[in-house]
Image (tube, rainbow, N blue to C red; front, top):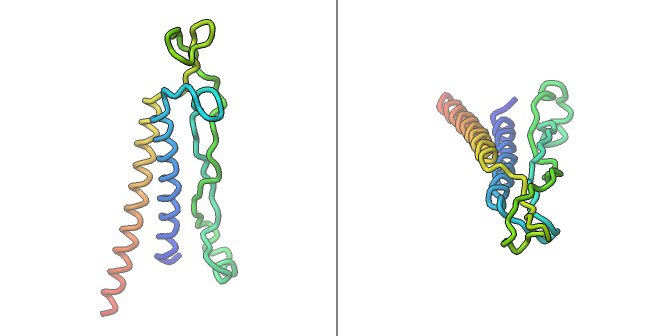
Length: 145
């Protein structure tokens, strides 16, 4: 596997984790949102990752088995949680029902922060992999001098 392909794989990880961080940020920002355009409280967003072979062109496809194990990651979909909202008693809230309960999003901010740290670490790991590949490429060029 060449250095450019390893950079491409790490770059796909960066893009996928950026989407994950965006979804988590949206969840944290809307943890108290009781009314959305779709109706009802905000629904927690989750990012689903998928993989595909790391092949750029037809020659890579013909190479076949040597690089068959190398795969890039991508976001296949962003799904909304199907968990029911949490009912909180607050009769003075404008979105309270006739019994005084408000439907709040089922979002645990502490869990979202833990997920954010995990996504950040994965993002940083991909940056480190790209920097290592770049350093290896520079060292290979220096050998040729």
